[in-house]
Image 1 (cartoon, rainbow, N blue to C red):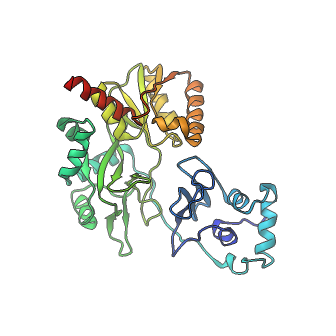
Image 2: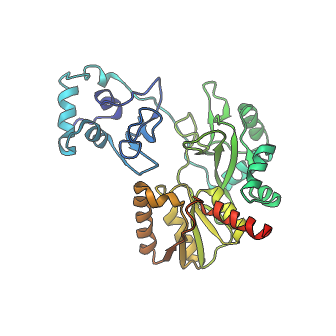
Image 3: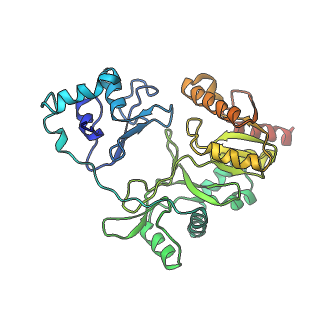
Length: 354
C-alpha cells in the first residue's frame, strides 16, 4: 500500500503552502479560525505527518487533512489522492519528488538535568523594570517574583549564553530551547522580548519555560522550545504547580495565573497550558492523589461560557477527573473579569482601600 505524506497532499489542497525548508507551519483552522486567511492556529508538521490546533483540539493525519480540505469522505481519501498523484492528476505531477527536511532531535533530559540547567540559565538573566511592574500590577509581591524565578527573555547573545552554560558544566542536549546551529555551535532559540515563566513540577523543579511575549495579542504565551531544530528538543503540555499538595486544589489555565492565584489566596493551584492541552494532566493528578488529593475545583477563564471549543475540552477534562475518582466542581465569578487572577486581585484591592 502506498503511504502518502503531508508534502504529497498539501499542493493538492486550497490551503497556504509551506515556505522554504520548514518542517512545520501554521494555517487558519477550519474549525475555530473562521474566515481568516493568515496566522491561524492549525499547525501542520511535515516531518511527523500530523496536524493539530491547540485552540480547539482539531487534529489528525494525512488522510484527515485531505478529507477536511477537499470535502472528500475519509474512507475514499486514499483513492482520491492516488488518482491525482500516481496518475499525474491535477497539481500532482511533481509532488512525490519532494522530501521533508531531516532533523535529528534529542530526547528530553531528565527533570534533575533540566532543573539545574534552567536555574543556571535564569541566574544569568535579570528582570526588566517594565516586566517587574507588570507582575506587581497583577498582584505578585517582590518576594514572590524573585522566588518564582521570573526573568526577561534575552533578545541577543544566545550563543554566548549557551557557551557560558557549557563552560560551567551544564548540559544543553535534551534541554528544550537549546540546539545546534548550521555551524554546529550550541545556541538558544530566538524569542521575542517578554517575561520568562519557569514551569515547575510538584517538587518545585523547573520542567521548562514559557514566555509571555510583549505586544502580542494572539498566542501571547509560547513554550521556549527547540523542536525540529538540529539537536534540539521540544516540550508540550507540562503542568505547573504552585503551593503544597493537599486534599483540594484549584485547576487553572496558565502557569502565571496559578502563581498569582496562589500568592493572593494561599490556595494550591495546578495549571495546564490550555483547556485543550491536557496531555500531562492525568499523570500529574495521579501523583497528587498519592499525596492525598480528593477534590479539584476548576477555574478556567470565563470566556469558556461562550467558546464551544473550550467547552469541548472542558468536558473531556471532567471525564478525566471522574475516571480518576476525584470529586470536582467549578468556580464562577463576575464575567467582567475573564480570569480568576484578575477577579481575586481586584477583590483584594477593594478590601485594602475600603
